[in-house]
Length: 594
Image 1: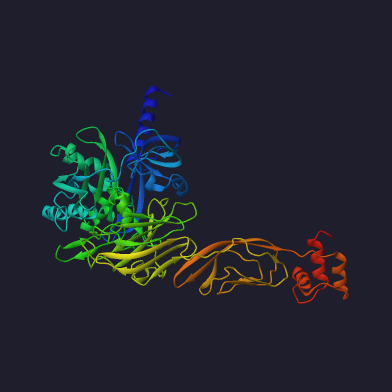
Image 2: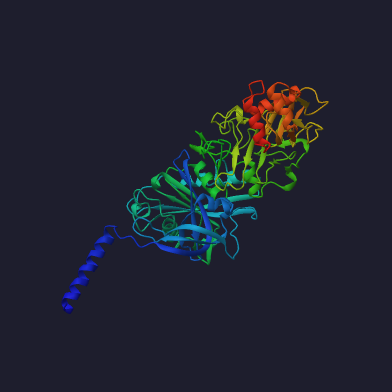
């Protein structure tokens, strides 16, 4: 082949490659066993003004602010404590890398292993920060929509303000003045590319490019060293999504981890409160039905209401569990129940609490998972106004810290799919009892700004029960009260299994004829008007010792076995009320004789 022909072939190959790239047909090869180290960034995604269809996206951020999206199986994330505990940690991720190409603007690492890496954790919450925090809100327009603005700047100035309804005012009220977010609004600035370059049709938004180009457009006129957080507002629906979390970039100084939001044009004040909560490190909460935005008790779920005077959707408070996460509840105002204890105290309201009483109560759930219940009072006050809360009363959440996306879930007694009705609100005269975990909560009375409650862990009745019951014999009638001397109440078996043939009566007597032998462990509970108790019990059931000759004589009609012994033999076989050949054969086999 001549040199000229070689050049022509090379030119043709290059032209074909260029055409493939232009058509988006070129896909870089997968890189196996790629290892990258950085800080794990969790960004929460919210769809639509109604805050539905949530998702969580993970990014591994390096010192230069370059992000690699991480896809990890649920089991791998759970082994690390879930997304919430990973958030801000410096880790090393190993897996298969799909480099950036076409519509995918950032590389994707399909993780097989995640391990801690040396280096400080980025503090994502405001727990160690007090006083006003300065944020900058940057208004950005896409190059193909340079004249479109979702709202006038004056609207955002009102929403960010220190008076109702304003973001600074909202977080100051939630934190009881410990933290505020004062925001400077700049722009609008025109981005260098059209919207489709940042949000390709059918693809996820390139959050890194949006952050880089929006802050880059503002950089000549903004001194970022004066700010601690960045809010980005775009003049597009952004495929109907908004996001909250953090991003890394060097802006007027060394590389920093910036609390950040990416706001669509449909965002309201409630959306800003929700996404800025994520920027502070807060997860979602919800009801117990797998729907992220069904709880109206929390801005970090679906809590919001329209204020016609303010002309926007406004948020309720966040839940007490979240305030405790952020360090906004002093240790002296947090009641932590001890196992097997009972206490009565005042529980102050979540919003604008009085000086008296606890602000949150935490009740451990046995089992070693680290789960617990939280109690909080919700009364109409401040942002917890009459139009924002479903009602007034004590609200209980079951919290699993290992669930990184939605650790706190409302306890809804009627299990009807609605965590905002009466089934989720405990008022004076009502009691929540979880027999399986030994937790009970009674709301005794209303106070001026809260409720008096009685809580118990491990039972409230002084029931003396021997953990080992009187032994039973297979085939012999059994009738033993589990708590001699305790009258009244309703007894049930809440865990484990009784031997076949036995049952626990409502008045607490274990009766019947054991139809199997062995060692049986189970948990019983009793509920009375004055409280409840749970106890773990053990029952041993043995087999009667019979002589082979006596058994054979019984089969032939000349036996001297007692009625109980004959019933035992009958239970070995067909249990038809008499001793027959099948019963004896089964007994001989069980004894190893046949």
